[in-house]
Image 1 (cartoon, rainbow, N blue to C red):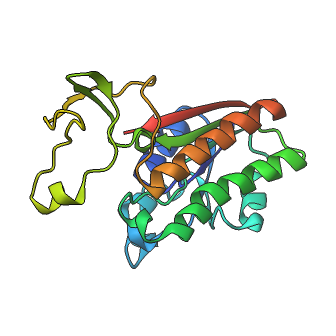
Image 2: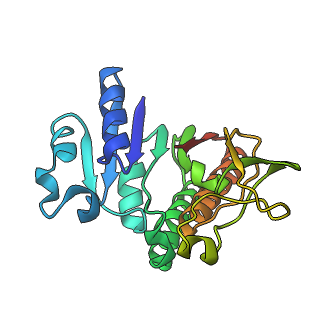
Length: 214
């Protein structure tokens, strides 16, 4: 199978690419070689060097249509991993996160919806950040708390507390049925990515899955 991995030179993407190559697939990687990930000399990074000679590599951005057109040619499957991923950083680099994560995904889907291609499967990297602070137990039952208060943070109290009793909440495992309530721009963009792919792909006859990575 011919498979495109966006963000394929990152930690997850490069390991996935090598696993797919070992399984006999023909892999193309589209990656911007971000200095934030690969350092000042990205083609010298261990992640990039692990792919040399093993995959077809395109240095480019998911925000550029010409890069998508080159990368999509002949592909039968896509792992869409490319994204800006800093939760805290997303709160002050808002436009960049929205442009790359949401805009890049929209551009991919727009090309697939309006062109001829053999793509039949897509996996999009979503995130546990969709769940915000996660799932907790209070005296009143299950709760999904919002952000920590400035008062508590200033006092060095980093637990989450019940609004009614003021007691510390008990953290519970977050499952797929937990409430979606992202607490960062990053989380919002990952929710948008997931919903775009899971909404559009079925109308195009493309099987789609979203994995909420932790």
